[in-house]
Image 1 (cartoon, helix red, strand yellow):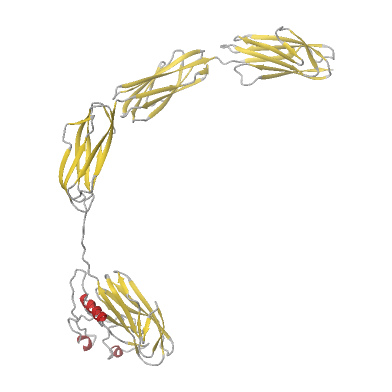
Image 2: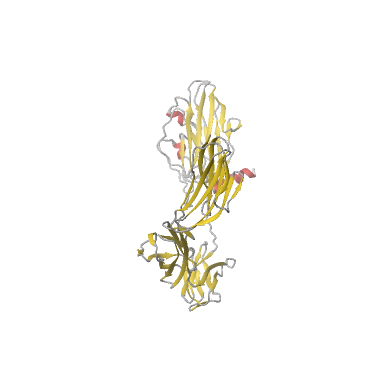
Length: 546
């Protein structure tokens, strides 16, 4: 008996009131509004007064105004044509198919009904939590004359009482539904009784917090030697409790000096609060320095946050490079790429780039933005270059005569007073042009007759010498006999002339005497090669032999 007693006492302490719901299959409309026991409100108060309603008899009024029973129970007639009088039977007070409280509601909803004996009736029992509730027990009692067909979910049976497993907890807005199918076995009015018992949930919120300090430090990545600057330190309490006795210390390394304090006593730092501190510094020595700051609090001894801001102290530097062709033919366009790079550690501004043009050349174009051009120079300005940034422009010139030129360029930054110079040297060459010729003095000829082949190589260029390498190959119809150039050699069907140098507009001439030895179309092949040619030039002369 003790467990049952303890359960009843828990129900009384939670001010949980039961509910009995009347389900009338033939009465889908909601009954008149009624006042029911008030359960504990969410603000902790409770109201248990019960007020009698005109629509019901003295059975409802007989309930105590301070009732604290664990459940309420009501019954009603369940037939296809239930009468109002049947809804107030001796089995208990009639409540109707719906019950509302400030903790939950109960509804009995017909799904499929029939007034014929032996046919099935299906109805839905729905419990909706309006607040957080626990230990929800739902049961259904069937009267004699109604046989259970099925339930969903499955209920356990104790005679004519159906019980479902207790629901440990229902959150506000959660819905629990039971589907019940019964069959009538005789004529009459039948009463089904629903019972819902709950325990209300009473909550007390407690909070515990911890201070969490975060430190951020900013400063220049680079600075000129001897310049003054400041470090900015921001301390923030990102925790859930105030931080007490907060102290920030900035540890300056050697090479950096400060004209102000480096230890800051802040005191209490509230949750979400931030404080920003400034440390004036002078760059005394060149090098890279890591400035470290730390923060502590008396009630957050385990929290130690460090923030570092590296600074590199150097002088500004600029670099200019110029590239162009080492050799190029005259009348061709020579493109020079000029690349200006900030190789220092601070931004350079208003960089003036001046390209000095060589003599005896013509400016074709320049890509430098907003630049000025003249016959002897090109000048343009680069607004700024960040550390490590490069910018490339180009200058295009041409020459009408062979020469060697040196093209110089200078880049100078106004804000840092740094500059650099670069140059490129180009050899302008005259383009070679060679005419190769081979021809016979008689065509056709008879077998046994002699034919003379003349080979002429002409340097048509006006600026440079060319070397000449000549080889002549005869077909089977003709045999070479002799050569006017005594230094040449005859190797069977092949004649090779020595390497000679031909001056601009000059020419060299060779003659080969040969004899026809077989009828047919003879082919004599001339191969000319030179150091400026990627492959030999080939010419052929045909002679008909009969």
